[in-house]
Image 1 (spheres, rainbow, N blue to C red):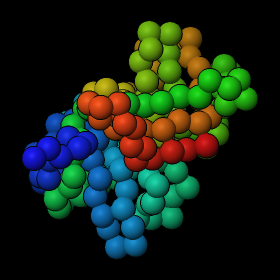
Image 2 (cartoon, helix red, strand yellow):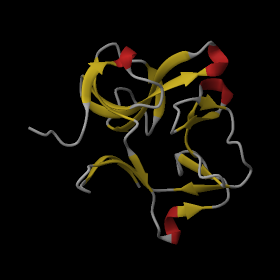
Image 3 (spheres, rainbow, N blue to C red):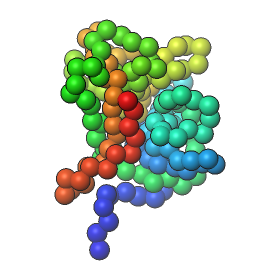
Image 4 (cartoon, helix red, strand yellow):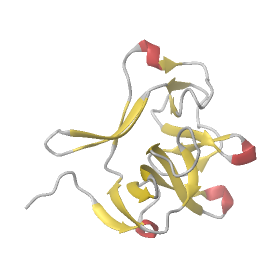
Amino acid sequence: MKIAPNFEVKSFEKLEAGDLFIYDFEGGASAGIKIVDPKHDGHIGALLLGPNFPSNQAGPHLAVAPNKAVVSFGKEFTIQFPIAPAFWAINETPASDAWMVIDDMKCVYFRVPYGEQGDCFVDAASGKIIKTPASDFCAYPKSWKVAIVTDSGETHVLVQHN
């Protein structure tokens, strides 16, 4: 028997930084990425991506690590971007308009509020929090999807922001 897409059910603490997961909470379920903050003694938490949020947040945000089982897709996920010009900005826009940043080295970051420090960036590949992207040349997609693409080419969208 085959199961598609490929996933594991495990405790959040057994995930690696950068792993994509789904967990449920009272009132809904959300996809997220396990994060680590190297500047704060390797503090571990979650970047919640949606589509639902357990608090009054309008979009992706950092959260305390869930202390429960999750459905993990590991690092086998795809971030899909638009091709229509109307969904891109080259000049920096407010985080509420563009939750993602891509630099000229094709590094992809989620941009989210980080308390009184303003916005921070989470490297989508590693799950590490950084203060700013490594490059000054960035683009800001206003629409994006996080998806799982199966071996047979089927695309399963977990989260979509427009």
